[in-house]
Each structure stands twice: as C-alpha cells, then as structure tokens.
Length: 152
Image (tube, rainbow, N blue to C red; front, side, top):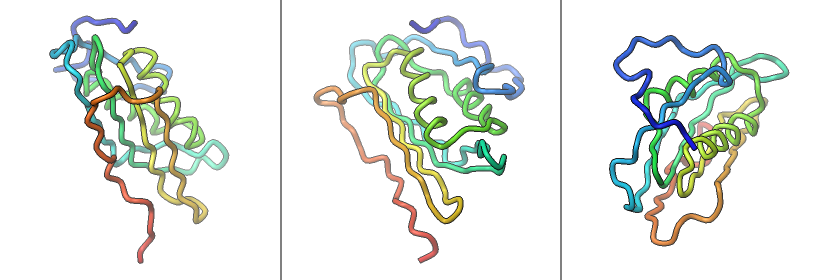
C-alpha cells in the first residue's frame, strides 16, 4: 500500500530526480472515498531517451485511474515523469512501467495508460496498458489523442 502522509514536494522547490528509480511519488487520502470517479492526467510533452542511440523520444501520455483509498499528488507525478528525460528505455518499457508503478503503489480500483509516441525512423508507436477491466458504471471517455497522421 502507498504511504499516505503529508506531501513531500508540494510547496517546495524540488530538483528533478536523476532517474525514475530515484523518483518518489506522493499519495494522499482520496477526498471522495467510496465514490466511483475517474482521474485523468495528460502529459503531452513526455520525453525519454532511446536505449540504443540515446536520441530523444517524445510522447503524449494519458493516465486514467479510478481512485480507491489514495490519489497521486500531481507535483510528485510531474517530477516522476520528468525523471525520464535522461532515462534510456524503449517506448514499451516507459509506458507500461509508469502504469505498473502507479498501480502497484497507489492501488487504485483501476488504471490505464496510453503512450502515444511520435515517429522515430518513420514509425509512430502507441503503447497501451491497463490493470484489468474497468469498474462497471465508470464513465470512461476516449483518451482524445488521434492516431498519428503526419502532415497530411
């Protein structure tokens, strides 16, 4: 279970963690326990590095989750996502790893992540992961990121 305490980073000047492994995520008590609702984070400027060439890769991430006992504090999530800036990993590893870490630590009712990666070598890659079937009656809007179409 995630550690629910006062947020460590909120209101503080905080340096970007050197790596995702060093990044700490803060979780706070769900302000609406027992209510089924969806939280969405969009990170349209996510960056990481190719593990082969060390060239930058860019993605638009969309993270949706239905909270249980806790919610993730947004500044700590921003720092966690920013820690990938100098991290070398394949698109699949970044996307699925982010989703699995949030699900493991926060233990929401349900979580999904869509990683919409911009083309490298002429091929865009989209990566999707979810923790299981969404809860019944959860309003689940489309993630709203169109497939890559290029200039035309």
